[in-house]
Image 1 (cartoon, rainbow over the protein chains, first blue to last red):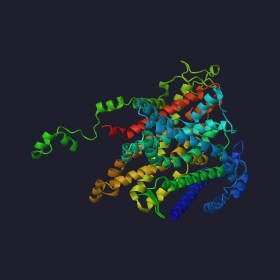
Image 2 (cartoon, one colour; image 1 turned 180 degrees about the vertical axis):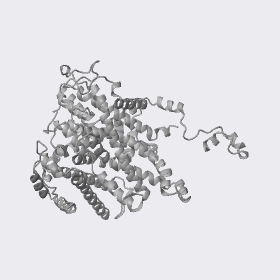
Image 3 (cartoon, one colour; image 1 turned 90 degrees about the horizontal axis):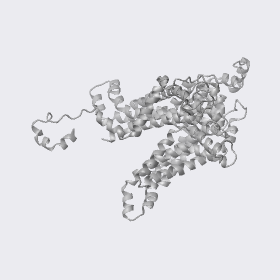
Image 4 (cartoon, helix red, strand yellow; image 1 turned 60 degrees about the vertical axis):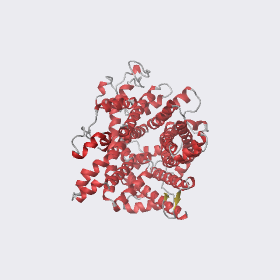
Length: 319
Length: 307
């Protein structure tokens, strides 16, 4: 087990390094010249002082060979230093760290909502014996993945803030302001969870062990939850691991719609200002979240399903 | 073939003498029975409706004049903020422009962007996957590690990074969205090529001395294409969403252009007094995406399962 953990950690570090490299290549090496973009970012007109450009070039090390730049940047990034924001001059790391709690609050509540709503929908759709109800419930998830998130958010604002005045339309203060954004963010995620879980629940209910449990006299509800759901939740867990990164990224849109402060709005502002160090930091952070959640999911897997044996130094594998 | 023999025991009794000719015309594999297609569609009104919506959207993007005669860019300022009515189906906006006409004309921009995005993902991802699957060994390892890395960055963040580097505009946004979904195409294409490569007919063709490009072009690619095409139809829906999200954030075509995401982001300013400016263009996006997803589901085995 320890060997497995160490190997997975090394893999995670490798992926992180590569993701940072991708961000570096895309942002510092693609057509647009970052320095001209940076110097132009704060200016009204397109006119940029050439001396200012030279100074900036030197400051950011762009007058040096790419490989030297890359090793310098990487060396600093490993220590958690992604440079300073071009737009505000503050260190990227603290900019992101300040914005993070709000976004974590939002994504955590959205994830919780998504799991509860999506899971509940899947269980209800597989449990009911009424054909029309099942058809109706199963038609909801495809709808949920097809609607634009920002549109859902705006419709919620329009009906629950402007008409009914139940929740504030924007801002960060208090749990009441969290309800609508979290619900908006939960719609596509919950729909995907429901799709996967319903499918694997239907498969699980066809298995022999379900019949055995029924034959032994277990109630329908008990069979459904204790036997089928427990086995069916594993594929859904994998999906949740993948969805967390998507939720964090989704905060860009949702926080813009609801004018909430957080990582998403920092990102949107950085893209608008072509604030390259901040965007780099965000990309690296997104990869970090993805790698961490998948690591956690992989480590939790064997605890939930004892059939999955972790060989020392090897991958998790089913027997 | 074997099915027809089982159904006809009398025929099999006579069979040994004249093996092939008496079988009453087994349907050739590729011919599609029109009656069956119709029955398939009639039993699925949702699918029929989805296909109809897609036809309308495609028509709107090529011939917007068929649907509306009003100018999408020129409004009548005296008639601003009119709610939906017979004259203006989707109402009018702050400058008195007809919103329905803007949505219809916007279909062209949004569809173009989506098409570019899917094409980029299909070509680049498919190429990576085919090369990785067909060449194998270290090339496969290297390419697939790169794909893993692309997958580890949330798609929207990757698109945003690309937009930062490339700049704004419909085409650039489309390319950014396309590159963000390269990884999934590469994975599916590689898996399919690997599956087909091990098939007996490929081995047979190789052992007959066929060149590698002949094996690839005649046997591997045609048989591996199906799932990748299904993925492309699915990706069409998610690309519409991604493109409209990026143009909602303001990175798409500059304001007067009626791109779908831009329309909603403009309408957002008048949410309190003119709900139709956001609700109805969003409905157009949702209907289009829902339809493409429904058609993708039909392509993904529903047809072959029902026989």
